[in-house]
Each structure stands twice: as C-alpha cells, then as structure tokens.
Image (cartoon, rainbow, N blue to C red; front, side, top):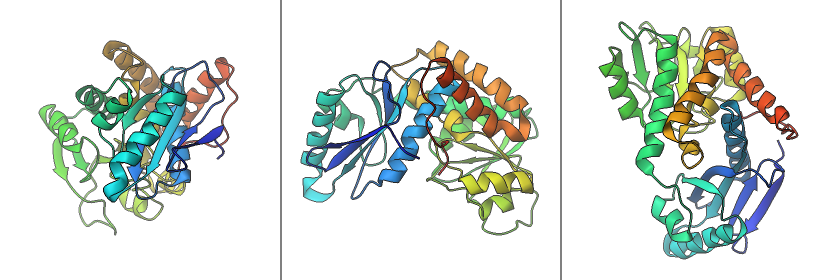
Length: 292
C-alpha cells in the first residue's frame, strides 16, 4: 500500500500521510501522538478514512497525522508539529486519536472538534449496523472491553431489547453458545486469523477502523463469522465538519443497505461501493484496500 505523499513536520518529529492526489477535496482523518507512531499504521488509517468516506458518498482524501513525542518535550513537540500542519493544510478536518486531545488541535487552529457529536455519530453507526441485521429482542451481544464508545453502544442496544454482556474475545473454542454479535475495536487487528475462528456463528461489528485483519476476513468466511466493514461502521466521527447530522445518517443508511444485503460479502461490497464513488469522481483508485 503506497500513499500519495508522506510529509515530514517539525524537523521530523511529526508527519502527515495523504492518501489521494486530490488537492481540491477535503483532507480528513485522525491525528495521533506516541513515543513512536508507525508509518505503516498511519498509512492504513489514511486508507480507511478514504474508503469509509467514499462508501457513504463523501468526496475526500483520507489522511493520518503522527507525532513522535513523550515526556517533558511532549507539549512543545505536539504544538510545533500541529502548527506546521496547520500552515500546510489549514483546511484539514482532523479528529484526535491516541495521545492527543481536542485542546491540542484547537490550540493549533483546527476546528470541528465537538467530541460529543463525534461520539454520537460513532454510536449511531454501530447501533444502526446491528439493528439492520437483527431484531434486538432475544439477540445476545458481547461488547469487547476497550471498544470505543462500547459502554454507550451497549446501553443503547440494551434499551432496544438486546441482552448485552461485556466479554473479552475468546482465545479458545468457547463452551457456551456464541453471542449473535461481537462489538470490537480496542486496537488494530484485534480480530486476527487465530481468534476469529472462535467467533463462529457471530456477526462482528467494529467501532474503530482496522479492527479486523486481512487474514481474519478470509478465515471468518470459512468459519461462519460475518464481518461488517469496520471502515464504514466507524466512519461517523470523520463526518463532523463535513456533513450535518441528518445528512450523515441518510448517507450511512444508504451505504449500509447494500452492504447488509450482501451478507457474507458485506466487507467486499463496501470496498466496491467506495471504489465506484472514487472512480465516478475521477480519482485514481488507491492501491490496496483498508485492511491491516
């Protein structure tokens, strides 16, 4: 997978990955800070943003910002890297990821930082995906600890009639019947080709992008686990500042309908939907789909 561009920020302490060569469209994505932010992971996040937005009909390029900083130098490094990015792309629409806060972005000049609205759209996407598959009365849902907005998703689904429990992803064949749905997303590739074999009979819905690995998707089809496209179910936060709430909900529903109809091919159906949008807008298709 090759992004169009990786630009260094603040003497190499930060960088931004831009996924498409499309300067006339918004640049939308996530900014993160850690001791060492890996370029490959950032590239995957940028690709997931491109595909997720394209799948719901938004013409944008995904991006991903990484800042390498910790300890006493953290604040100055974050400030310097984000200021450099703002000077480069003041129109970027960013969400704070691991290690960053809305204040970090706001202090650099970036807007659209309504945390409550971002979380609400994430919850809406996950809940809509689940309710599109099941009548919640009598449905059992397991929520992985650490899944973004997992507590709120659990509460909403329980209010709608589902039986909801908190459970770690099994590392062996469970002795009890599988839940109808797993809500996951605590980290990248939390569903891999090993543990997906123990989720047979369940639907997997992620509240974060890149939660399901490429090999896991292949094994899931063989084992009878249904994987929804994580880059779509988690796209809501990226639309704040791009779409109003009603437009987002309409666009999300329009994208999920063919994905749910595709059944076990839902992940590929979402990729094809995104690629059709990109092709219609005459953007060259990026090489590689959004899977870690």
